[in-house]
Image 1 (cartoon, rainbow, N blue to C red):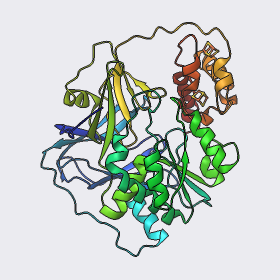
Image 2 (image 1 turned 90 degrees about the vertical axis):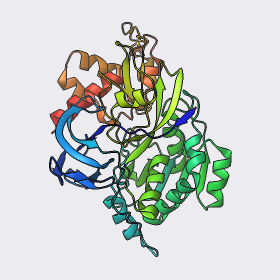
Image 3 (image 1 turned 45 degrees about the vertical axis):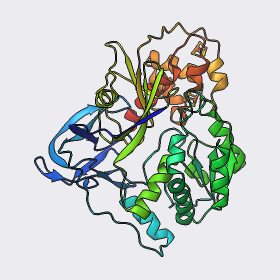
Length: 398
Ligand code: SF4
Ligand code: SF4
């Protein structure tokens, strides 16, 4: 897989809130100059307040409403990039540090709520945590050519990040990996390791977690004292603590033309997919479908104008039109669902807009593994219907 230099978009549009932290306070005004790593806003809900950082140096142009990866419009701060890359002063945490100092620094650097898609939890140490599990397997392993570059390039930072998570939680950290050499290095650093065999869907993660915690994982892993996060977050932990810098860019895998071409692109948060594609010397066909997230279970998007955010691991487009057939009610999707929430029934209720029925299913327990879509003989994107039902329920309880 090709690795290419970081992009320098002429502007970025940084999401000011997301589905879990729906409110925000701006710290900067239109016309103001900002630096890379400067706190530009605070996003919050009833429980947490998390900073939002600029990924470029430049001038704040406006606040625009743009489509977020969940298909809902969200406010974004648009900043014109002056390409000078001027940064705020780094604030590494000085040793010796306590668990509380580590936790505070992670919140200050915005790492606490970095990736909460699917099964992943926030780095919330306030519950009684028994176990931290770090998924160090590339998101698209088993489907796209495995990306070991991230692990080869950053393995020392990653291992230190896992170690810092152990210090912050005062609990053991178990690393899930499919790389024997990485497993050995983790063990030498005193981390517990599970060698796993990833598959294209996320069901293997449910099985791996179940074998570690010795029970069927509930949807909310924090409720049983488990923090479950990924390798990118572990690296962000290292950056926040030892380098004193927040996450302002992310390495995304760009899949072009039905994944025939794959590139890793260091992307500033807030870069549009259209700019990512232009930087990769690619452009989509007029009728292409865009997506963000895991190949199998990512969200499909209406246009390439959505932006890369801190959670994104994979973006791209596909030109082939998948002809969905009718549901033959074979029940395969219901049988395969790891959390047993009957995706066919949910889809059927969503199509009929039968709200009472939708509310009777535990749609919020969907871990977005994509298995229901994967097994469907009619090639229906069942997960997309489950997502719609989740959004309907979320709107209903606001
Ligand atoms: S509904 Fe589909 S995506 Fe959600 S957990 Fe079940 S099988 Fe996975
Ligand atoms: S797997 Fe596909 S065809 Fe079978 S019940 Fe589910 S949605 Fe219908």
